[in-house]
Image (cartoon, rainbow, N blue to C red):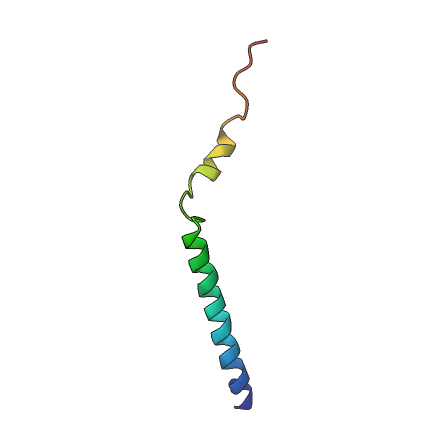
Length: 51
């Protein structure tokens, strides 16, 4: 039971840190555009060259 006195506050601190990081990421636009990065690999970086 003594270990719970240490583990519960540590778990609560970790949860608060995780929620803080999630809210920071949401407010900074990390989740605004989820599709474009996966589509960029399908398209060439260079235009069709006619040499």
